[in-house]
Image (cartoon, rainbow, N blue to C red; front, side, top):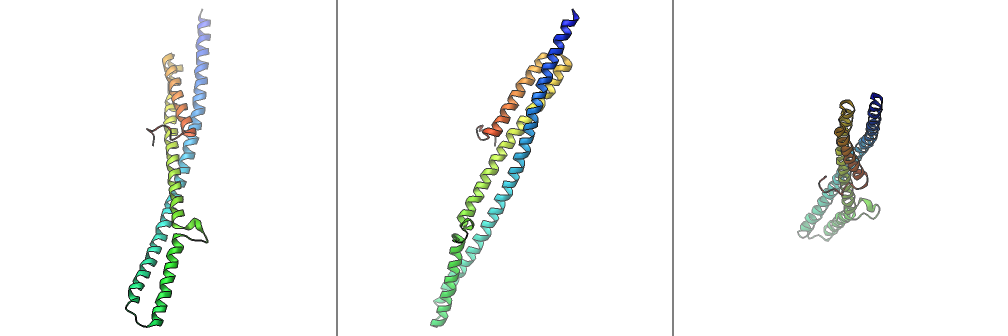
Length: 191
């Protein structure tokens, strides 16, 4: 009589051990996804910061050239010599050309102020996406870790409800993991 009971317990233990293996698989995938998302978010944050710094430097240089041109225009009115006015006009035109080049550079359009700002915005949006992914993976990993502990406790104690609770948390963790990979912006309460 004891033998069928032991066989049933062994079968339950094997099922729970399989559950633990599946939970561990999703946990490993979640941790790998979290690490990848963290690296990508950091890379995109650095890229956005670099681009915004580049934008600010170019904008500052553009503003200085524009201010210099305006200053020369004000001084030009006080100069009566036509040769001096011609030199001032030439310098004003050079400053205005510099400002125009900063605004829209024909040789490298990707370095115009608008293009730099758009690239920085895209990097910022990418960073936010990967931060959302990271949150999903971290919550998924937490749920899966707790599920592994509960499933292990179910084997030790023989309490079946712990195994069911572990399975439920495992499903929650797997769902969060899937959202992290496939639709990180779908859950509005993350990010």
